[in-house]
Length: 296
Ligand SMILES: [Cu+2]
Image 1 (cartoon, protein in one colour):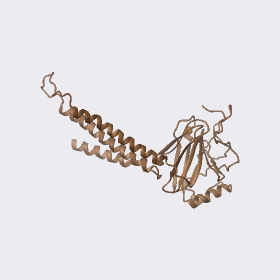
Image 2 (cartoon, helix red, strand yellow):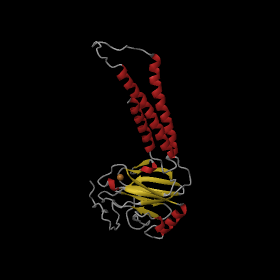
Image 3 (cartoon, rainbow, N blue to C red):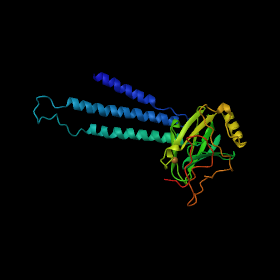
Image 4 (cartoon, rainbow, N blue to C red):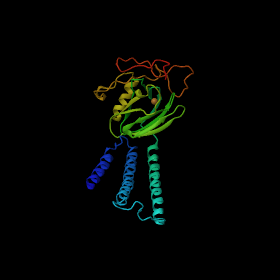
């Protein structure tokens, strides 16, 4: 019976470790490795704590027919034991702290000359992706998530900010999240390992339509990325058919300098209406625009 419980516990631990998601980016492989170290450290600590607790409960339980006031052997002042249970947790936390520092350095590293730089601006309740110097700006609207197209296998530089309240740029498969704060820019790099579409969303509750603040990042081969840029510049409204997955809906595209408000950190004038919905026509039944001035 006990052996069966042990096997079940071990199988659960191994299964949980295998369930951890691999990162889709090169940088966050280090985050994945750190997760593994934390997980297995926690598993060992749990095994020691629960194991010794169970042992004490079973071994030193009150025996049948024992007198009421009988106590197990009382031990005090075991110097080496006290040193061990102080030093070992300290050492464990110290090692985890150092490994976390190394991981942060990897995640926050920004090598020069990225293949693409994208200015990301969060606003209630969508995102603007601007490609400075390329003449391309993609702006989503509430219920119409925008798509960021980037070259796969190349270094991407993101400069993140917010036009109104605190939001957070989160792509679960990247194992990465960063806050978008008004008046502050947060920069980071990532290199997506394989072409594909990765969904992201705002991870900081920011108001009534927070749940509509989704977006996608589509990584394509570098040549296709250049073709996409040229096509956007030329004012085309749909990506090339070869690049469209069957379920994809073309993103609302606002060429730079045309319609729509700018969100480049300019403060919203007092009394201005919500910047949530640039004028993008849609026939989708799920798409909607937040009425101006309807902020909760
Ligand atoms: Cu948000």
